Image (cartoon, rainbow, N blue to C red; front, side, top):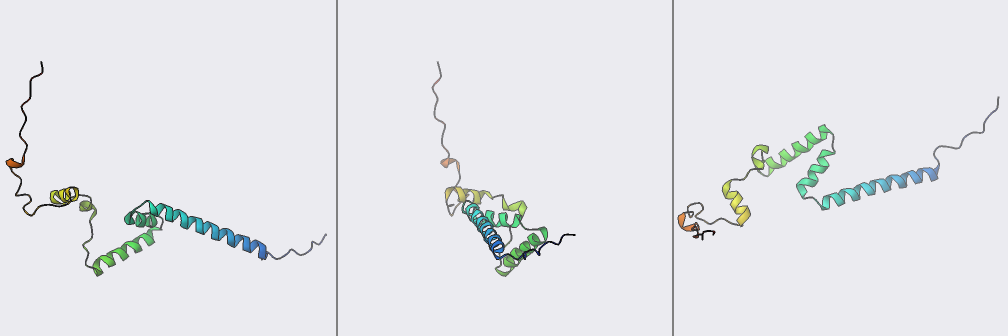
Length: 122
């Protein structure tokens, strides 16, 4: 039976250093990708992207924390059924920039355009 010489330790400092450098590079690349992705998204989208990557139990924990913040700062939570829908006044205010004090009472026939007479074709 042939006896092999003892192997060097698997704790090779050069190998461990290279692995640590590789791990740091991968971590930095991930951070850069997150920053690049975040630069093109608004804050809500960024939070959503991060939450999507979490396991379900951590997503619930994040949601619980958001509920805590809403309660602490007396913020009415947006419900999914109503968060995407605007009232007429909110829609006009968003599009026009503001709504007059007498809205909607100021809408009457005087503000409507009259039809222009059309010449007949022919």
